[in-house]
Length: 139
Length: 204
Image (cartoon, rainbow over the protein chains, first blue to last red):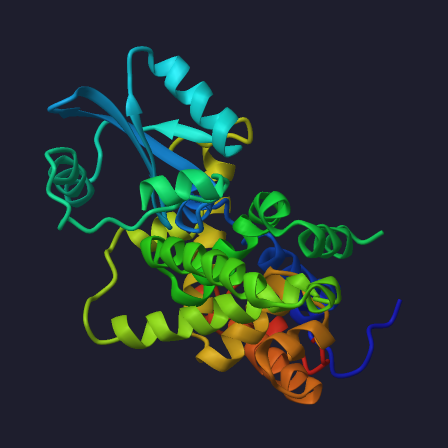
């Protein structure tokens, strides 16, 4: 078979590759997807207040559970049984709740001041889902 | 029905109930867009999470009909690209990239199974890493177009919508960006890919 004019053996060897490489590059680009780090999605949901986080906090009233999300403090209650605390929160608020080791320092300080009777300590509250009567009592 | 159309309808009906599904469906792609535009994993994570938070807050202000008609993929891409641009401006001259971050961004994973054999695995990581580094050298406007069009897989029209540029501009930017990528990769391994850098066909 006679080679086409003006083509070197090297070019002829590469010619099949030339027709497929552009698509190969696009396939390689399509394979550059990366899995989001664990916690990215949950963090976003917590920030918008669709997932809450809680931790125990010592107080003058004994050990209390403090729950919060990106909108503010969402629950404070006694913790005799962590499982019961979580179940009560989910039933009352209808949102998932996950436990972490500690309440963030700033929030912990503000809650401790309020529980000690200092009403000047300002805390953002997330009281969605509660009745007008409850809101009138608490705020 | 297109899953995003169904998701938009669910969001219109019950934002709080459906938003977790949006996070599950789009977190990986928004992280990928941010990572491929910025090149840094920590910044990409923050940008992708900020994009999801902004999306929720925007949706909370939209009328139900507007959410119903929303094309989620390009809309979320726009939010992510804008946040990535802002982040890039802030970090541009402030700190150099960690020497290890490009490895992670390139897909290096010490836990990866080695069923393909250590040599094949190393070559795959090497070629992926070369592509990530070459992409990082492409000018930003072209890189954004390539990332949305070929990494994220948006259509030409969706890419144009997401970036707010005419389709013809996107097509040209993708074409020129791909050519730059081929030249960069050819320079990396000249014996293997000399011909592809010469291609002139439009592949946007």
